[in-house]
Amino acid sequence: MQLNHLLDHTLLKPDATQTDIDQLITEALTYQFYAIVINPYWVPYAYKHLKGSPVKIGTVVGFPLGANTTTTKVAEAQDAIYNGADEIDMVFNIGEFKAEHYNKVRQEVQALVDIVHGAGKVIKVIIEIGLLTDNEIGVASRLVADTGADYVKTSTGFTTSGATLADVKIMKNAVDNRIKIKAAGGIRNREMAEALIGAGADRLGTSSSLSVLGIVNDEPSK
Image 1 (cartoon, rainbow, N blue to C red):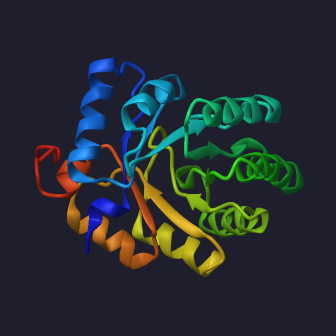
Image 2 (image 1 turned 180 degrees about the vertical axis):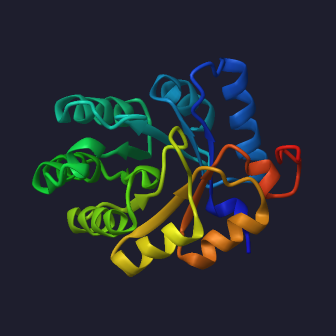
């Protein structure tokens, strides 16, 4: 399994510097990761350095809480695409979803899907599984699939938990093959990465890509 081509090499830390972004870009080019995922501020810079390369540029919208207005999320997406982003990872409105205001959530996601697809780009919708029950994970995954989004994504990595095998299986059962699944959060080794792919994930987001490939070891000490 060529895991490198399934990895979104991620750096979303608020204190990331230009030097850190340079390292991320170099690693992505060296190890041929599918994409990098960075905060919107760094998209124009990354575009200058990755233009013409096979590495895609992903960025985040409504991140990490999902509580921005729809207007703000649309503007974020449009700005990111203008600056060179190929893929948008948006956080849906978690609070409204938990309140079972599904139409509001669906309308917002649909607005973003239409904007991103209208530009010929890819959109992944983060449902933040760590804040949802098993039943809610299934409902959220189906809701996202109904909008025609490209991916439903597990997590931001900024809350209580990241991707688990059980959650990915629930998502896969909910959407079947209608859309793809991106697992993110807490993926630190090849064993976990391959297990998530086996459970139904099509793409993985991790800041530990080199560890997943066995190039370095950043496992927490025991």
